[in-house]
Picture 1 (cartoon, rainbow, N blue to C red):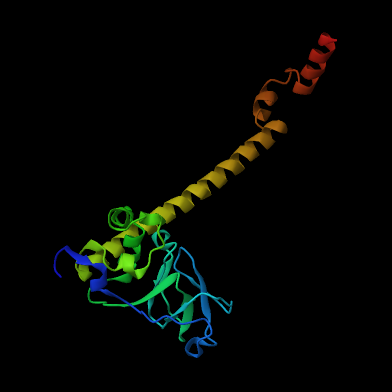
Picture 2 (picture 1 turned 180 degrees about the vertical axis):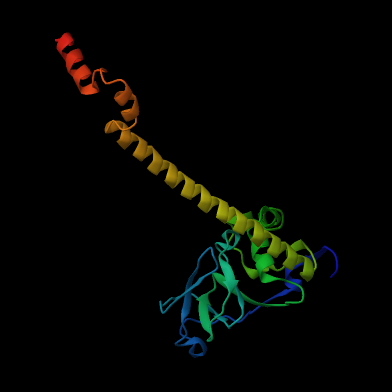
Length: 216
């Protein structure tokens, strides 16, 4: 592809369709994906489950059907097969057509949510399974363009993160400055030079005593 084209997600994403009973010997002893967080990190456990399972192999793209639009997806980089409940789906993909980093950003976009609302009954509230995802038609740029877009977005996000850190630093310094000014005011340091030049000025504590006496 050299330009943006309308394609089905199933043109570049291919589901591992096999399903297994929880006690199937083919998946016995395998770790189980208990969670994919929104940053794309996998959490593996040995928790039992009575739900049907799928097999996940190294370098598969794994998607959470419940939280896909929040970023709960990623490439499994382990060196051994694992399993997951059927609330997840696992795919091989054509790297000549899709950049996974680009695809993940797309799945978190408003455009993806709009497509779900238009093409999937129940929209984003539906648990997204392969039968919902793979038929979706999306506008997809060339693989070269995808990589450029991802690189540009990463650059913008890095700058944004640097700015946020600088804002936090400046807010911290401002808070310390305010505390320092308040402390010096309490200790009389802010008016020290003025009081030296005006030695006959009544001290604040004496003024307060006089005011209190006059009130009484």
